[in-house]
Amino acid sequence: MKDLKYLLAYAIPITAVIGLYFGSYWAFFTPVFAFVLMPVFEILLPIRASNLNKEEIISKTGDKFFNWLLYLNAPLVLGIVGYYLWSLNQISYSTFELIGLTSSVGIVVGSNGINVAHELGHRQLQFEKTLGKLLLLPALYMHFFIEHNFGHHQNAATAEDPASANYNQSVYSFWFTSIIRQYSSAWKIQGDLLKREGRPFFSVKNDMMWYVFFQLAYLFTIHFWLGGLSVLIALFIAVSGVLLLETINYIEHYGLRRNKTKSGRYKRVTEIHSWNSNHVLGRVMLYELTRHSDHHYRSNKKYQLLDYHIISPQMPYGYPTSMVLSLFPPLWFKIMNKNIPQEMKD
Image 1 (cartoon, helix red, strand yellow):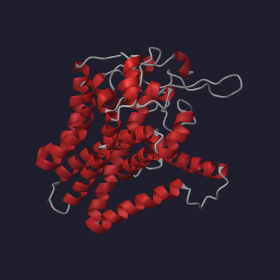
Image 2 (cartoon, helix red, strand yellow):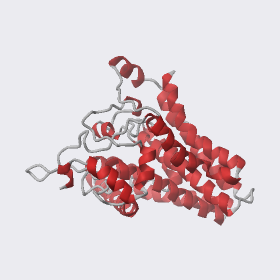
Image 3 (tube, one colour):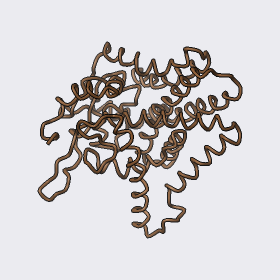
């Protein structure tokens, strides 16, 4: 029964549905819930650092319940996005409501779309990988699948990784550098993969070209059936979702760096190269993404099996609270810089 706690991950989509149904000030229910109420709850709720025992690991490893919790996000996220875009031609929203609902749906795309796509992208089944790519479509961020799996996990906590924030880099600067460099990196990685397989750049195996095609087809379909306003809103939804993702990327590795060996190569990724958080609310609502240290240490682990390592850098606050704090760089630096190991600052 205690595994039902992961149903809380559907709370953000539910708040968006409430906002769409009631409108008016409820249009902002999702951002208020995610970035005001959740941080308050995180402070009040306990921190749990315990790990699973052997019996629990065996039980949870093959339990399909945890898989279905992820799969159900696909119709939920796509349904919310689709309904909102369709409703633009049915309901006369005020500018106030449009701002609130667009940011709300964008948060859903980021939390239950991209975040779940991230988990599924590490799976072995082709069905799960394809479902993950589908969840990246409303964010227009399908290249994330390539860059994250073939780039970020190799280069995390180094200067070569676009998704690892530098010491004293603000989140606003990081948004630009990470988004631009990740897209460029994805194309480079794709080119390298094709060369390794002896295939030309213009090949049916060039996934990046397929991603461009699918994303343009997505926007064209919206324009054809729903009109120009819906396309514009779809773009704003994508931006909102991507900025949520990149803010999470920012706090996950901020200031942490792998040192080089005498040979000039970086040391392997360990449990000390990502920020960990054991705050229970963020853990269950983000499918244990907050145990990011173990995810990078053993990226093949499913979310329900991730462990806490005592040597991992610990965030003073949970992920939702930390995301809010990161929007105020002086405060963020004051809180986080003192927790970064000195050897990583040099």
